[in-house]
Image 1: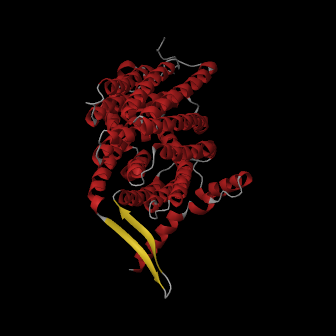
Image 2 (image 1 turned 45 degrees about the horizontal axis):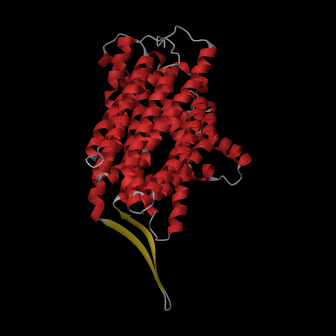
Image 3 (image 1 turned 45 degrees about the vertical axis):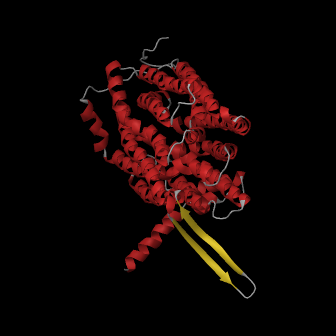
Length: 489
């Protein structure tokens, strides 16, 4: 396999490369499904993980981004992004197989600490591979089609995630119900399978041609400071950091909350996750089309308030004991979470790619990832500690109605342990969203215009899809009320 960069790629090589990148994405998604998400949390809980250790597992993927300077050094040293991305991807996926083999051979002595140890190297090498892959893709994918292409790739990977997650959830629940002593071995087999598929994906990625690029020979630390002195990119970092911190406090504990507080099985949890994935699949191409036509910043401004509402809604899950009421609320949360995060994640990634200058893209993107890692890794650890702090504390608000014949109590809100995290995360996300206003993007269109266009487009396909037009501006209305009250003081 010839891994040397090409001076220029033909249209045929670009098109073939784009197809192979989708193939690698499918393999990576399968690997992540087998070894991450709810399955990783369930395996950790089976090993006796504490809230802090769950937070540590959630923090590692972002914490290891601090080592992305190594990626810049390697690309400067070898001037070959493909070698760095492919070989680091291979090194990242071997620890998954090691985890599975150790769990099969010595299940009785396996521990949560061993899992954390090997997962660290999985995330470490994955983080080193990331910047070179991002820079490589920036040159490979035509800029005018960034949103459309990655939306298409995401729709394929999410579809695969839906199918695999459902199959694995039923398998794990069946084993847990009928062969409980084999539950850990089941997770071990999943890790071996996921790691093997990941290695195949890395080999597929190795067949994608790389267009040659030349990095400046400037001192690496001075080079790293360049994006920090870029005013507009700096404002993007402020928003991104605040957003990451807010979400990372709450989101890692959604699965733990459903397992421990609600007592839901993996099948229910994965079914809800699939509902969210399907919502993303059905809307991500729409988000990609509007992001390309208008701007990524506008899409974030539309999707983020809806996602914050979803986080707040978690505070009301379990308020009443009725199973079906909780399931309906959880279903609604996951549907609108999928719709909103599809646009948010796609647009945040594309906005970073768009604002990074071509000649120093890997430096800009690495600096962004490293800074975000500080906030994204601290958040779950804070969340874990807060969950322990609030474990024996609660806040309940009720309304009581009394009459000669009846006496009823209506629960308005009941906060305890994880619910506190969800509310704190939502409030911090609301504050972070205000920082987005200061980011400038070429081709930016006023949000109100895009909302009108999207509302018209959605109405022509789905008449009762009213959320875009009614919920996206709630945070602005809230801030106006707060500002008016402050002005009266």
